[in-house]
Length: 148
Image 1 (spheres, rainbow, N blue to C red):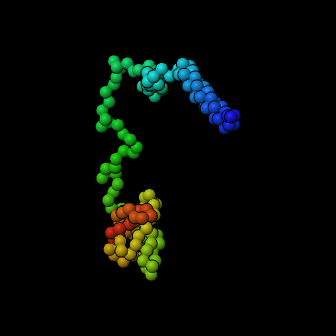
Image 2: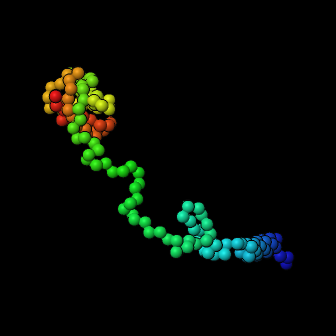
Image 3: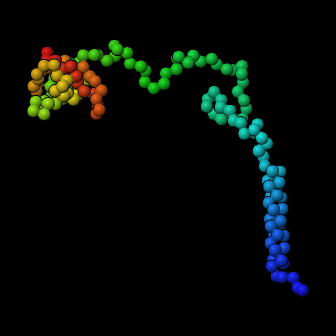
């Protein structure tokens, strides 16, 4: 009896599969030989005092001790003396039917929103007032507004 055609195909497929595995192993070994990685020591980089990346570690004798409290990030902190609590301004616009208006601060010419709930006295356009500021949803709002 003659052998079936399938067994020949199976042997050919098996030999191809083994050849692929062998080629794959040879390629990976070749890659390992030619790689210049050399481990963790070749991958480490250092930053010098000027912020440049170097391959040499820093000299421990040149190490500077820095006071962490002296470092300022961003804008310096505001003190109570920087911002006056009570400001003076003039009613630039006020609609008593809708219950809101704007105060223009004397000196800086900044405009601040004022709502009827923030008024201590009744006001109209042109009145000079003193007020305090409070952060609102859309910016600074004038509150505790008194006529002068």
